[in-house]
Image (cartoon, rainbow, N blue to C red; front, side, top):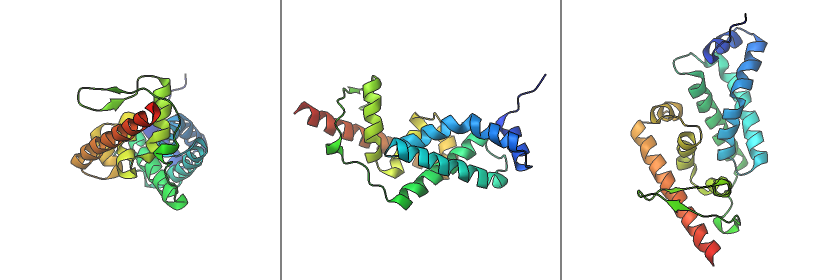
Length: 188
């Protein structure tokens, strides 16, 4: 009977040079890393490029993984930094809101936060999300897409938890405003 190793154990074995453990570790975490990259990128092609950069950074950084945090938290930090570096390096400019053409409907909760109600809305958010400032988009994606806790986001981005809360709140507000602007444009 073969025992399935957790990410921490796989990371330790990969650090010792076990290529099978490294392949298993990367395969197991690929989808989460790609999802993070997809939400940070302006396009599907960019997301694939960013994901490859992130995986390379994870492999190169693996000797520095010390196990103080979970492997997933550490890999999110590495992937986030790789994506931000790629965005800066490519000097990508988010698509202007007025060029977005996906029709959408928006529901507003009692606290004023705009949420997507169906697949079309989610596709629309994928298209408009790059227009949110990086400082707000990154923690917002980490919270809403990857489901990280505020503490995990603070640890990953190496910022205080109060800053995380503020940036997520401001990101939600900016996203809501962008969605509201687009809704008004579609109504015309």
